[in-house]
Every structure is written in structure tokens, then in C-alpha cells.
Image 1 (cartoon, helix red, strand yellow):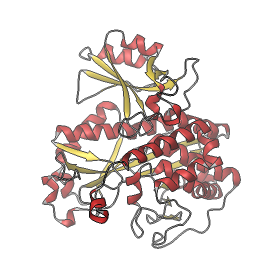
Image 2 (tube, rainbow, N blue to C red):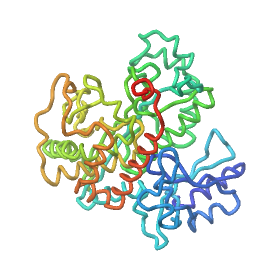
Image 3 (cartoon, rainbow, N blue to C red):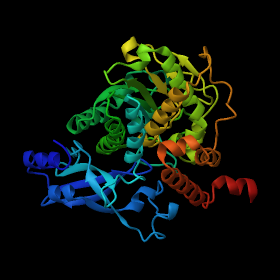
Image 4 (cartoon, helix red, strand yellow):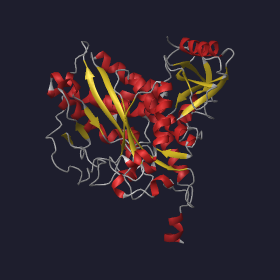
Length: 443
């Protein structure tokens, strides 16, 4: 099944479905689109759903700030949304509703360059031209929190966790038992939606967890599974009277949330090139390290994202690499040669997986093309000293991003400029609000 036909098959099999959510993944990794009635939905999707192009230029809060001249300045023209093959699914928390993911095109049928899905495709096609195909898997970290916020809007732990002993953290199973109904619901939802969940583990933060997704050779589908997993976890938490957050640093005194990406490359015969030639793995790591400063604005996309980077923790503050060493930024896990890969550990849980994958894959290609030496592998704790080349605030990261010829070549000038303008305007809007500490310090 492909394109709109898989929706037709789903509707035929599930006569109770009454409406279909046709949605894009936006710049922030959020789902946005339209809800269609069942009657005529498959035909409408086959022809293309009209949605303003500016949906790809919204801030995290959903505001259109005319970034990149998209919105008011250009008259807010439409883009055409066509279904992503195989994406039609029932939403198990709303059994009368199905969902279809969309890709944005222009009216002449060309992929719209400001859709993150098309940005990733652009990079994958570049690798394909070199005879390479990525195999990827994401790991998503998040906190389970209470539905009620603190007086200042800050997150609070739910009762199930606030009474937990400290020993229940960091790979403890008692905390998984305490939240068993939530995780059982999430697994059931994921099975219905075809999202391949692996292990669920408790992390070192109180109420923090990580879910592993299975690896796959379709980069877009692998990124989609992160988007769908976030959607699943939000719905499962709501069904159990809880909430979850993927915010990079929701608690000042607890570890931040990451979005780790495992990557290997296959040649046209399906062989892992990192297993065949360790030198090529080194060049890939060298490329990731070389472009890490330029990619930081994608992998740490907002003001809060930079609070996550703390020396001496498992969140990297430099561009070190190592074998089976979680204190580094770029880790080569212990594995059989056929599964040899690099784990990219810099991105936050709030980052867009399409854009994270695009920047990491582009960096790998850069390193392999230029045979960049990664330097010596680190041993012991490699995360004590900050790298002065890594930008540690959003304005500095955006400055590196927009001046990077490599990022522009990989993602396209149009997207680099749009992304930077959205983030700058979003930050400016956020700083327009008074912070309580301002009154304490400056009143």
C-alpha cells in the first residue's frame, strides 16, 4: 500500500472511523494540519490537502511571526500536502479517528524545501548518490510529571514518584512498577500504531525514563517513530491522569532529557561500511565533531536547551569520542562488527528528529568525503572540560549555523535562513516577558 491507498484500506477495515487527522511535522517537531470527515477523505488526500506554507515557519508556541517573510509578507500561500506512504493509522485513544502524515509539496509537485521531512530526504539522497544508506535508531528521554503545575508553572512529580526512595532511580524496576499502567497503555497504543518500542528504562533523574526505538533503514520512518512516540506518551499519560515532558531541562537539579541517535551506513550490497573499514567510521566521527558547533542550533533549539549542558554529567560539553564510554559526545557502543555504529549524544529531547538526523548524516558525509581524523579516543571521564568551540547559548549557536557553508550545502540556504529567523524571533518574543528574578535583581 502507498500514498492515499493505505488510508482507503484502513477505512474499509475500520468502518467506525469517522474522521481523519491529516498532519505535517513542523519545524519544532509538532504535528499540525487538518481534520477531515471520512467521506471523500482518501480522494481529497490523493489530490492533495491545501495548508499554508507558513505552517512550517511557526514558533514552538504556534505563532506566525513572519519568519523568513513567510506569513504576511508573502500573502500566506498554500502548500500541498500529500500522504506519506504507509503512515495511515488508527489513533487508539480516539477510536473514531485515524491519522495520516503528510509531506508538503509546491503546486508543481516539487518537494517544499522548508518541510523538515524534505530536508532530511535531501541529505539521504546525497548519501545515496555516494552508494550509502543510513540505518538509524533513536533513544528518547522524558520525565513523567503531574498534570498540575507548581505556583510558578514549573513541573511537579506525581504522587507515585514523590514517595519513591532514591534507590529506585537509575535502572530501578520499582519505579516502572509504580507507573505500570502508563507504560502498559503506551505499549498498547504503540502496537496499534505500528511503532516499534524496545526497552524502557529508568534514568538517573527522579521520574526520568528512556525508551529505545528499533533501528531501521528508512530514515524518514525512523524519525516519524520519535514523533509518534511523543504523541503516544502524551496520550497514555493523559489516560492515566499524568503528563510527560520532553523539555531539555525541566528540573534545575535533575539531569536533562536527550534524544540520542545511533547510526551506521550500509553500502549497496547491504554491508555495514563501519564494520568493513574502521577508518571510515573514524572519518564519520571526525565529520560529526567538525560540524558539531554549526549543528548545535538544530540539536539544542531553544533557550532551555542549553541548561542541559553541564560539565561532569552524561550530557556532553565537548566533542570527545570513545569506545563504550557514555561520558563522550560520540560513542561507539560495544557490538558485533555487523552492528558497529556511532551514537550521537548531543541532541536534546526537545529537538526535531528529522533535523537532528539531517545534521548528523550530513556531518558524517562531510567527514567521509574529507577523510577527517577524529583524533584519539577518550578514556575515563571525558566530560569535565567545556569545548570553547561549542556554542553554549542559542544566539551563538544560530550565528555558527547561518555562517556554516556545510550546513547550507546540506540543508539548503532557504531552510537555514528560515530556521534561524524562527528561532531568533521566538527567543525575542520569550525575552519580552518579565522573569521573577529580574525583580529580585534589578528592582
